[in-house]
Amino acid sequence: MRILVVGSGAREHALVWKLASEPGVEVVCAPGNAGIAALARVEPVAASDVDGLLALACRERVDLTVVGPEGPLERGIVDLFAGRAQRIFGPTRAAAQLECSKAFAKAFMTRHGIPTARYRVCEEASAAHAVVAGGELGFPVVVKADGLAAGKGVVVAADRATADAAIRAAMEERQFGAAGARVVLEECLSGPEISFFALCDGERGLPLTSAQDHKRVFDNDEGPNTGGMGAFAPSPLVDAALQARIQRDIVDPVLAGMRADGHAYRGFLYAGLMLTTSGPRVIEFNARFGDPEAQVVLPMIEEALSTRLAGAADGDAGALPLRARPEPHVGVVLASRGYPGPVASGVPVTGLAEAEALEGVRVFHAATDVRAGGIVTAGGRVMTVVGRGPTYEAAIERAYAAVSKIRFEGMQFRRDIGRKALALPELP
Image 1 (cartoon, helix red, strand yellow):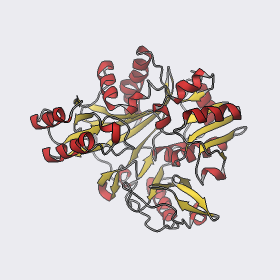
Image 2: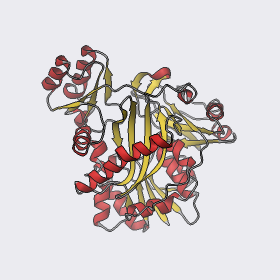
Image 3: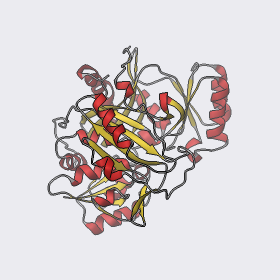
């Protein structure tokens, strides 16, 4: 089977690593990165160039295309490929609105009885300021840019002044471009946060596993939101009973609602959940695998993923859940100085071979390139260092032992990834 993987981040490196390890699978990746180039042939076609990707898939006669990031989904890559009878794994443009528009997602959940926070959608800054001033959602209040903002368009505002500043940044200053043309204001839910993943074929959502990620840039969940500074899986908060409840109350209703609305959902479904006193509530959906969660979840899958993805693209991924090893995995993101703001690129990276030589360690590249025969940085999140072990403590130790081997000027990372697995909060 020849598979085209679309994307260039650590999530795509993890996908390529998993798929390329399977018998009879050949992987092409566009545009890829330095780490991916060691496993698969890379082609210089941008993930945003959906027409170029279609031409590449046709030229290479690929059997399956797997979409990594959300951008191509918003641009309708699945619809485009389907129109040319090219098999592709991912949701259609209409179904991907679950992620691409928070207002759409909120209306969808309300319509189909999926538990989430109270909210208001505001088309004008004046209306948003008025909702905040009225206090109907209380404080803290969550301010979300409606569209895609690379994980950075969310502010949990403790008071009116902070909320008003977030509204101005999104709607008046347009810090997130068109994504902030309208905002969603939400009540702030309370409880531990988890991520849950399912592989969907339009009818069924096969559970993968749970994870917990770390969005804030600094230790102890301080500083601005990022695309993700690390993750661990599985979440020790999710037992069999809670997983069954998430499946019943959230995953299954999403698939049924999408079918009822005429948009069968095929692809990865990511549900970001808050475990409240009233049960799990949806904070957000992603219409693809999370990053950095993919880097800790994919190495847990014990069976061939390629056949399941191809089956899901055809509408039948099988009835049995994917087999997964229970070993904890912990992933630490190494980022450039200044992230999530502007960063410098082209900084040499050393120590990768020493890190990957350690037992139970794998390094997935994100923003990397090759220059003068060596690996250099090429963006904000440079790579994810993953450790696995028989316990969370062992996985954490291995991940940070590998991190200590890697060097590049300005390297920043959190030092508390996985700590939440060692000191579990009391569930509501």
